[in-house]
Length: 250
Image 1: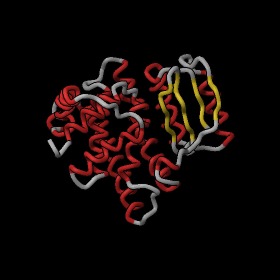
Image 2: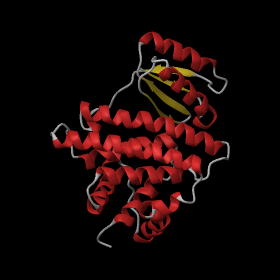
Image 3: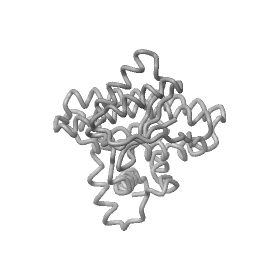
């Protein structure tokens, strides 16, 4: 089951994050993740019907929530490589959701040392590195963003411009990290740990032929879910820039 509250992640996210951690600490809630679906959000709770009622009541009491609708959650297993691949994807989404809520709140309050877009760029670049074996495979994965419909056709000049913009975050992440405040470095460490756990799990499934598709055809959908969650507007431009940066033919 999922809920669709009419609320902004920036205004409501931190209260939601704290509530989720509280429910999980009590053992009342398993995995949780959200998507940013303007003009509101879509929340997915892995719990019992009775607990869902409690969570719905909590949502309705929040001043930042204008309206709450219930909807059936579709797991979208196919695009994640089948049931087992979808289970790992949901592990990723669950951890990533809590990080996104924290980053969005810090950015909204003006206390963040790097924008949500920069943090997201570092996270997805790290994720792709862990899911691939070399630079060619990483480039190939970004090329496959075409299957999501989020890779626009652009000229060489724009691709070059975007590559110059994203290159430090893709190829020199350690240097970038030195200029980020401790709070954001801690957030990124948690994100990288999540990337590692889920990469190991996906590689294990691939090794045992338990995925419907190659990992490089699945992770583009993880990235789209991540970007929507983090509220990243320049998805197409970032895709083109990263692809151009990693292009081994240039």
